[in-house]
Amino acid sequence: MVSLPEELRVREAAARQRVEELEAEAAELADRLERARKDLSRLEITRETGAQVLAELSAAEAEPETSEEDGPKEREVPAPHGLGVMTVPPWREGLVVAVLPGVYRGIVEVIADAPGPLQAKQIVPRIGLDATSAKIEGTRGKLKRLVERGWLDEDAPGRFALARRGPGADRANSR
Image (tube, rainbow, N blue to C red; front, side, top):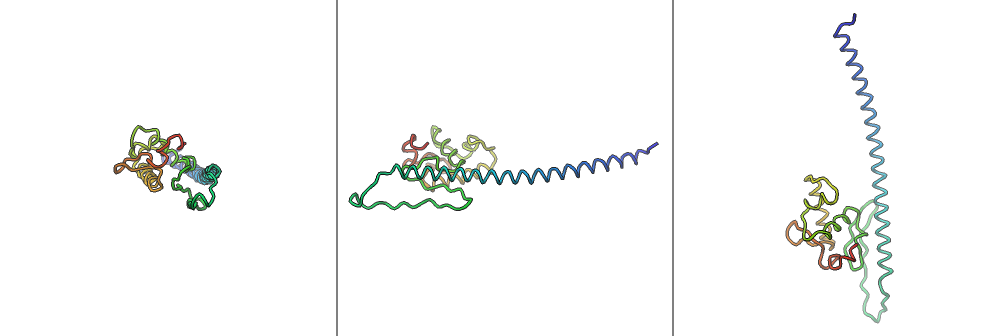
């Protein structure tokens, strides 16, 4: 007959072995998940950069040719860019929302559909994020960047609307 303490030791050893096996599987899954996230991030950046380049090319093709007789031509300053960096280009005539990185585009579209100015905490759930303070603060930073670049206006502290001189002047142009 097996004693109770001996049986408990055997079961504890088996449980410990199973925990170690599961921890090893979890570590492998975490590594695979991290690699998949990096692949996804690279693909998102590539797609967004491609959309931005195409939008800029089509905007450049749509600009009328001017001669020197028409007056000095304003020199365009390209939006800053870098490898692996998602940028928000400064708004200029003819630039559409499609050139913005995905989250920024979603924010502008939510604000465009709103009847009035919105706060960051109102925007977060509408772009599919959990309404945690971290997500709200991150979104507020993006809103401030969109204001700096001329896409949005901050009518009152913390209340954001489409820029009057930018894409808000012509909603059809903003999409």
